[in-house]
Every structure is written in C-alpha cells, then in structure tokens.
Image (cartoon, rainbow, N blue to C red; front, side):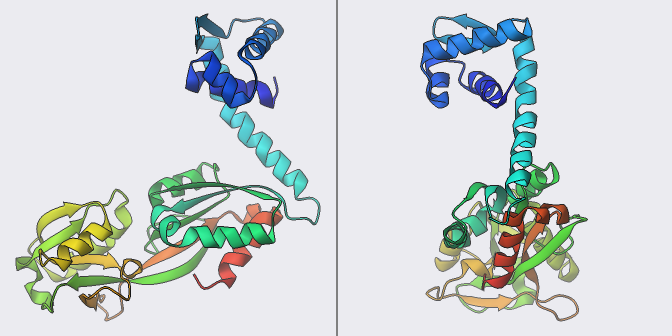
Length: 290
C-alpha cells in the first residue's frame, strides 16, 4: 500500500459515498472503484461494501483506515526531513494556535513568514489552548502557540514566552475591590481552564465569599457589552481592551504586589529545530513585536 491508497481509505470512511470520495481524490467514480478492486486483489481481502452510490468499509478496511493517519503523518515527517537536508527552507509545517491569538494576531504574522519562505506549506489548527497543547504532545503538530500561566503547561521541552498581558477588572465606573463579592459579575465561561484557574486563585486569596455571578457568557466581547450597559463588572485579558473602550479598569495584583498576567507561549521540541522551517519560524516569532 502507498500514500494514495491510505488517502483513499480515509476519504471512503469519511464520505461513505462513491462520488463524494472520488471528488476529494480528483478521480472519476469508475477509477476509484477500479483502484479499490486492485487493492483488494493485492492484499487478498475485501475492504469495502458497496450499495448503489453508498460505500462502507469492512472490518478489515476499517483497520487499514485506522492506520492511515499514522502512516501519512510518518511519511510527511520523512519528507520534511529529506527536504530540509538542503539549505533551502521548505516542507510542510504544522502548527496549532490558540483561538484568541488566531483571531487577533495570526494572519499577518503567517503572511509575512510565507512571503519570506514561499516553499513552506503551512497546515494550521486553531482552537482552545488545551486542545493545541494535546496536538503537540501527540506530535500531530511541530509547534504550538498557547495562552496560560507559567505553570499551566507541563511541557518538558522548549518553551518561549512570546508576550505577557495583564488581566484587568473592567467596570462602567470606579468600584472598590473589597466590594466585589456584592457586585454582579459578568463571567467568561471558557472551555479552556487556564484563564479561569488564574482568576479563581486570585479571588480565593482575597475573599471568603464566592463572586456574585449573574451572567455566564462565552465571549469576551459579550463581557464588554454587558459591562458597557452597567450590568456588572468582568475580568478580561488586556488583549481584548481597545483604545476606544471607555471603561474603568484596574490591573489585578498578586499577593506580593506584582501584576497578574496571562502569557502567550511558544512550545516545541528541540529536536524539531533540525527542520529549517521550524528553526526559522521560532527565530522569526522571537524577533517580532507580538
């Protein structure tokens, strides 16, 4: 079996339709059926069941498809290393980026990088930091850009702090910190635990009563809109506060008087620096004003 066979099995498993699978593979349906039959003849087992335009995998086919992603990942790694044996920066570069950074920072950064290195093919995943961290741990990506506190990522390899941003209390007008337990709070209900963990730790160090949470929202822009309409206060990272926002705000301070921060981190394996594209990207990120 080769790369095309594995891609074929993945498409069949995902589409379960001859025409749709053929379109993804840029072949005609008869050509796809012919390739399936040739593969079945080669390995000596039936791997598909066809009924009209519908097609499913047999247990044997399912097993082969389950191995396909592993094979394709290893093959991609092999090609990348071979390509990087030359001095030219090229290959397939897989990165995972926090949704917030992807939304506010990523596009112009990647545009400049691929302009400098046009032979690098980027494959980008975005999402919550916990998911991006998991992709890095399972080696599905070369590098992750994630957000959290210094102790949130139990990463034994290379770690670089790209940017540190303040965590702010925002309100429509000035409020006293000691009054917070009695004032309605608009709470960011986040699926990633890092921001929540930092804020909760700060709260528990100062108050014996829980916060008066009256609203749970899943977006910092919604937090701002509720605060703007005097429906409570909120905690937000400073990246979400623009020069045009007319809020009262205070930086949260640690017990020792330091400013409470949320970091943006670049995580990767030192061994990945053998790939010139990873090496150049890490150098590039360290050199820019993030």
